Image (cartoon, rainbow, N blue to C red; front, side, top):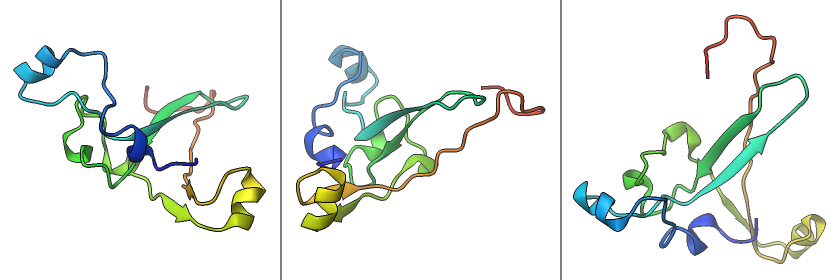
Length: 113
């Protein structure tokens, strides 16, 4: 990714609820900065998830209560023109490593989704 998620989205990222709805709940309409993923592989259940930027000021008060500690990622700024060129991005860019674990479709005894 080229920019850190909260740089562009954290301040004004709104969900499909009105300001009146969140005001009535004494909350703001801002989501914590996050990236969505859909991970598919033949023979496995599809995983739909997201990861969050640990430096977003809305992390502790996400409007839809979607933040879990296990979904907070470590974004690293990479200021290396050679590495940037290798992945087709301008320098600097932000990088994150994340392991996605998929459940086999035929896995017995797994928890329901």
